[in-house]
Length: 82
Image (tube, rainbow, N blue to C red; front, side, top):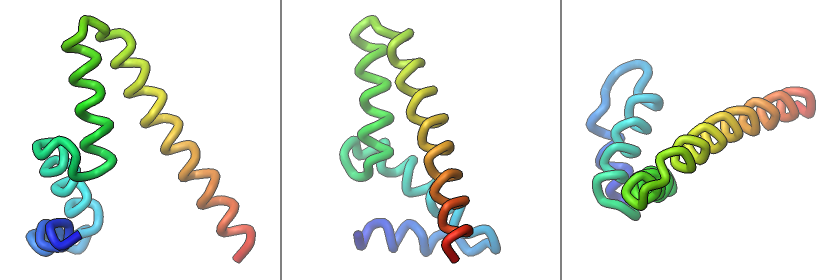
């Protein structure tokens, strides 16, 4: 948690939330188990390394598209309830 805060403080732009998240995701992927994004990234690397690039690609696409779709649905529902 402290590391996330420290990394987020490195970004001082008006769109800081987006760029601090990018930095946290990249740092987490380097550390391997620091964030859920790093776990996602490492799993893709492991699938490719085990000779399953197709499965890695499907995992990547399903996770990203499914995650964005779920976020959009949750956002829309939240706006209706507000």
